[in-house]
Image 1 (tube, rainbow, N blue to C red):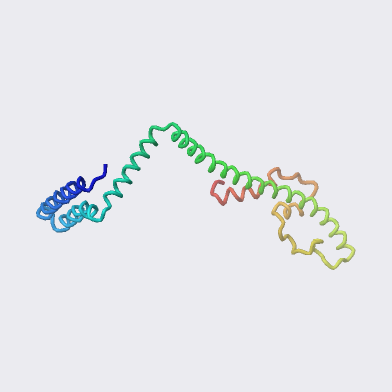
Image 2 (spheres, one colour):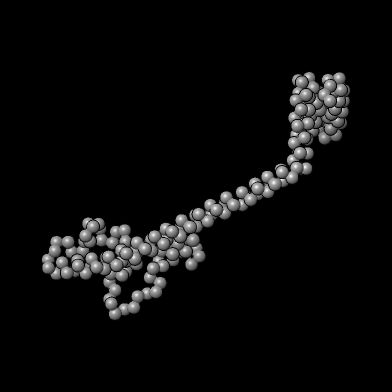
Length: 186
């Protein structure tokens, strides 16, 4: 299908038409329009003289063959459907994983704060008893850390509570309330 004798008149004719159109564009719309059209006009002849016509023909024929095989093949459409399913499943799974890990962190925070609160109340009663005896560390906890460091707000608030007052039913939700406030929801 490819023949140099066939392509020379095609490329030369396209370049000649482009040069004539560039001349008229130069006269009517100015030098910039004429020069731009002249640049496009000489491209077909440059492609022919450099031997790129054969390359462009081969690429064009392969592209047409691929597109026609692509459009009319049920296997290709099935593959495209699977690409679509993958494009939906992967981001949804990643979002679910992020949500689950965040929920796990919040749940882990609740369980550790609950055990700390129970342990600190017991330690607090021992510390008060040892202070009455005359211990050196008046407010230190057995771990040697600073007072209140690393403890959630609910634990610190729970120390001064008397047994007569009922507990606040929303006492464990300070961290969730803080997250909601940071995001501007509450």
